[in-house]
Length: 337
Image 1 (tube, helix red, strand yellow):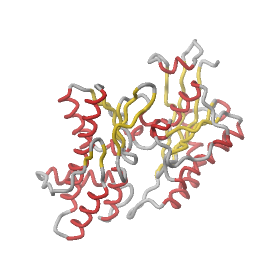
Image 2 (cartoon, one colour):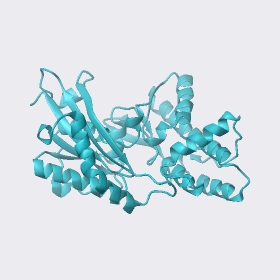
Image 3 (tube, rainbow, N blue to C red):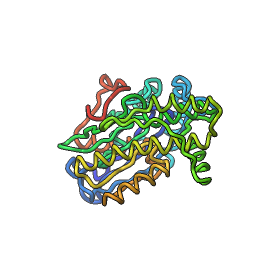
Image 4 (cartoon, rainbow, N blue to C red):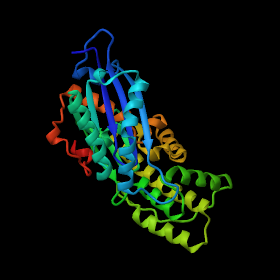
């Protein structure tokens, strides 16, 4: 076995088309599957190109996002290889987000990965997008999926999740309602920060936690009505929305920490870029004597470096995805892996 394995990963679950390159190995010792679990294994992200579909107003339209992915596909691959200073013949594996995600978008990434695999005769590996966010983490809170997950007895298990929509999707829908573009989470964060700087006027919203699960549909309906009434400012509504839904996430995350007896919390997904959520989780973890981990922003948002890294781990376990079994899986749950 070679001393180094290089994987090209492709991410296309939603608004992001990304191409990442990851490498793993040791300078003088061949790597094997058990080595993947050892902290001493040398690992490096060689490139992480992110091409994001955005709008000035309105939300994501799957067909338009897919068209964007087709347009940027070749450029993203070229840029990633150039950044890593390698060519396709240096690649050992091609991995891609097989699911979950938006079907229109997933198909573009899957087609690109199949093409590279077949043309260059490289093993193909379809990976689960959510697990790529959290693979080495203990617990995870994410936007589009909104799940609290822990690794127990050899697999990832869901301890709590949304009963309707993800928190990231809900924030984007409210952003569309108030006339700001997609993705809207970062703009909502800025508006909320303006309100907080003035002391923060909290507007009461539904708080929906059911056991370990959360629900955002009723909150979205309620805050849309408040906005349409014209009685509240955008800043105060954004501030109140963040304070409410992030408190819900922190509550279920803390309960999961207590239930599992774990002492580490990892934030993953685009919503984890929100500094207010990070702050609230930090306070909770400090009070519990737990550690909070927040990766760099480029690894929080949807990206292909994480797809490439998980591709390496799956490859070392012996996983391969024959082309005839590489169909996308838009509803692929984390606990099905």
